[in-house]
Length: 314
Ligand SMILES: NC(=O)c1ccc[n+]([C@@H]2O[C@H](COP(=O)([O-])OP(=O)(O)OC[C@H]3O[C@@H](n4cnc5c(N)ncnc54)[C@H](OP(=O)(O)O)[C@@H]3O)[C@@H](O)[C@H]2O)c1
Image 1: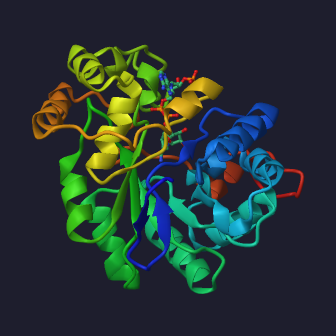
Image 2: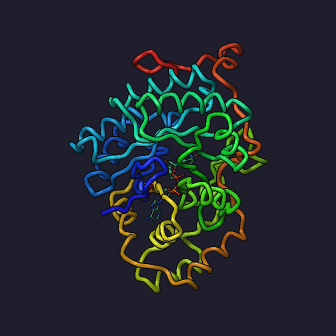
């Protein structure tokens, strides 16, 4: 059984979800079905992963009843703004083939459009199309602004978090405001830097970094518990009260990443894990500086995005 965390509105969210970034088409549907068959109860995706339809197909093939799975998606940066977010979330529901989603997040804060984007999500939450709403890559100042502007604090903040990057400034704010922090790239994306080509410094995109799964401290803890380094990292995050959403396209590793609830790290091991943050290696962009073009700007620049088979912008 995968434990759940009660969000501040009472909705139960599983601590473990299946990450789907980079999974597309038939492979994505197969892996989502496999994860659900194996016992996962949550799937994490985003409009920008271009796989919402494939995720929906995998869910259907699994035969799970609606109340047996939890799906998260995120507003694509280009759709930020009140009206565009309303359309984009409706489009996601169509792609999934679902009438309600469990959680929708504002994917990145950007500059100032995250406020109208948040207002649109709050409206859809109040209308019952979304069971919960939250943020991703938000710092305390962004979370605070959302609450001030709407009276609704994001229920979740999904942030980059792994042994080599533990942003306690955000975590402490989440803990004191009953926001569930969820760790993205919990395995540091296997060591692959995923910064945007536009914002990375020379040589930073697609760089292969040393993975924490090869770190001697983690290897030793893994040996102590007869677990793999990946299992130690995922368990450490859950023991720290974070959600985790590891991605894998390998059936053995999908199963392995679920077997993380049957051991506990000692206080000393927890301290050793926390110390690894001194490396400060970020695989993604810095949310305080990351900027992106909006749909209207793209259209004005003659870069109109493609549409999905329902006629909605992707
Ligand atoms: N909100 C955001 O801005 C944001 C950003 C990035 C990611 N995310 C979400 O977070 C999810 C996870 O992040 P991620 O996909 O970047 O990376 P991740 O889950 O940290 O790592 C995935 C990588 O680790 C490998 N791996 C998985 N399990 C393993 C194991 N047990 N042993 C060894 N290697 C293992 C995978 O390879 P194989 O596939 O070959 O197993 C893949 O290369 C994403 O899929 C996405 O849903 C959100």
